[in-house]
Image (cartoon, rainbow, N blue to C red; front, top):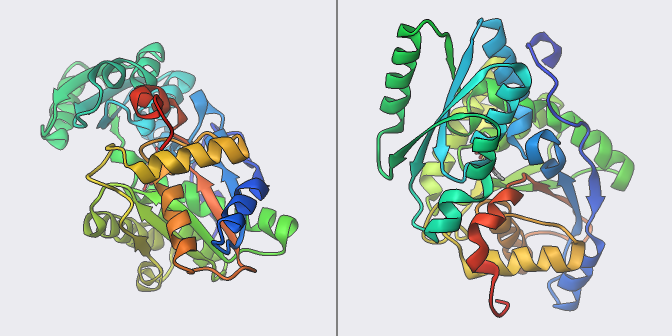
Length: 340
Ligand SMILES: *Cc1c(COP(=O)(O)O)cnc(C)c1O
């Protein structure tokens, strides 16, 4: 596998830090949970407009857009999409227009959700925003927008939901080597990575990257949509696509996809008490700001897996902090009032 063969633009501050979570581990140990050795990979610190996992994907996606001679990019997501915010920032930095198709699909605390957090930043970053009612057909809206942009002489490049296709996943295939090098130095190796999964590209890319390096570490996706089959199918689909792109055995990569359910609650973007407790725990024991939609649910999943005894005390387990912190401000009311 030679990732240098694929076009890439530099957008992220790399490598992101890998840090121990000593006080979180001690807290779990004092609750008699028998934690493994816990570390956090700080992909909330990728640097582009408050960072997050989409920056690594966009290094490959935006390079492809530029190679195709695009004058603008189109992407879609919810009003609080981190992917959309990072795409708007990448486009601004590279001098492309960004057209965002946003759906108002999460019924949560109207005012903050509709105006603060990521949507506030999308506007600040100068993106063209269309907001559709929940349940609208995003793909159709993107096609229509692309057609009208083309008719006006522009050359749009489509970026899928979450940047999750074979191209975007290359960002996390590349991350696998970065993480292994750091884990080797910090703790002598890596046994498992736990992360939030939704559109699947992050998990799929990491699995492909580890497999390409012949490394057996498990990559456990905590699905955050309340839809195990949907998320697992998405991860498998991107895993097969990125395997093919890298010339790897797709069935071997797909067989490594491991998705844990039970932490997504009633659905995408909807808060759960376990998420609130996990976000508060990480903040108060590590000074680490997780987010309510992805990393908070993923941390709840990690704690749940530890409580189930799924790790040995000697295992080196890395929690991938995938970003999303700006969404905290859209969920103000969840974190006000007495602690969970
Ligand atoms: C998009 C996102 C994820 C999920 O990554 P996928 O590649 O879509 O599975 C996790 N965390 C944050 C903060 C995100 O924005």
